[in-house]
Length: 435
Ligand SMILES: NC(=O)c1ccc[n+]([C@@H]2O[C@H](COP(=O)([O-])OP(=O)(O)OC[C@H]3O[C@@H](n4cnc5c(N)ncnc54)[C@H](O)[C@@H]3O)[C@@H](O)[C@H]2O)c1
Image (cartoon, rainbow, N blue to C red; front, side):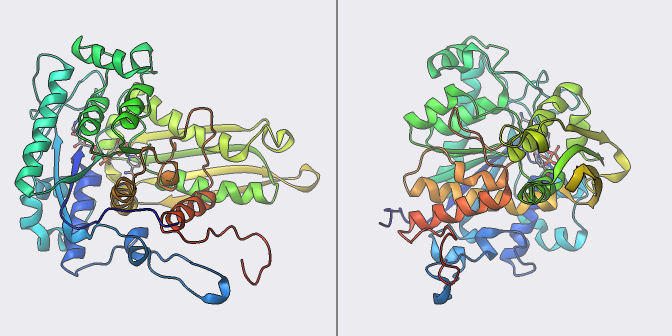
């Protein structure tokens, strides 16, 4: 049965903590697309099709014609950063895209200027900036964010919004007792507890207002019990964490292929060089640790050593990120994969991916905005596991293992859309002509 889904009409405000490379690339892209100067390459919500019914029926509508999504013309943008540069300057400084993409949308980009951020240098050590809030405690900071959001929504005449974390990766702090319940978390906010990260303050503010939260970085943010309790209490969807782009995207494409053919793994060495601000932040060991945990988890749960100890019980997995300024955002990644097959004979795969991180991230920022807003209008709340497709460390309900295999993730996403719209699910089991 089709779910009751509220209308997508009206403005949707996108609140973005962190207005650096990804955000400026994303915004420049949106404004170019609106003017017909580019196509939304890489975006499932804008370009993707979905199969419906039997194969013999040949029904493949565009996803945007199948589920009610907000038009990209109805998106409004606001955000926070520790630097107060507008998005035109941010796009130039980021050095990701060219003047031919920036100049035609200069005025749109200049109009977006970050609001003062909630920042804590204990969580991001390698950068500092002047555009930061002051407050008596962390609860007061959350209230200031709430006031910012209410003001923007009033100005834009909107009653719907989503928040996307595109700010720097925070230093690794394991969740502690104050993250276990909403009550303990709120008390800790008032006590200014150092274990409350800025990203969780933004998340708390958003969810308090009923605004869905998407986490594009590997820090915990909404992946803690206290914030999940708030999401469930206020019936707000959350999704994360850590955009699946670059090297990990390749890992979740190649890895399932090896497993499907039962080829064993002796080792997977991944290294890369990048020179953008993200790379600079990740040059600090405590910030890198957060990223490393996220990147390392992928292979273990994808290959499943418990089921296949002879194939995947004893492989060496290493991930290195090296800050190398001359490359800017034009990352270069190398993977050396040592595999084995029949009679245990060794083989090797080498991948050299010259990618552009923010170019890979921008379309999935758009998709997750569209989908989490759809989820909210369909009455979904709490962790949106069907959006795992977009993340390196997908959040799942306690006790479950996440799916990392990108093809399983895509099937889950499409079937969730079919389920929302009361369409038959497609499992591809059974008679080949019909499935
Ligand atoms: N580019 C990718 O492919 C990719 C993939 C996965 C995850 N990520 C993550 O996405 C995030 C953004 O990446 P980027 O390349 O745009 O980085 P960036 O360094 O260009 O931008 C991050 C911005 O966040 C700001 N910032 C830091 N702390 C803040 C705070 N507390 N509040 C508001 N602003 C704050 C910084 O000043 C900076 O402008 C990073 O955490 C990165 O690790 C990126």
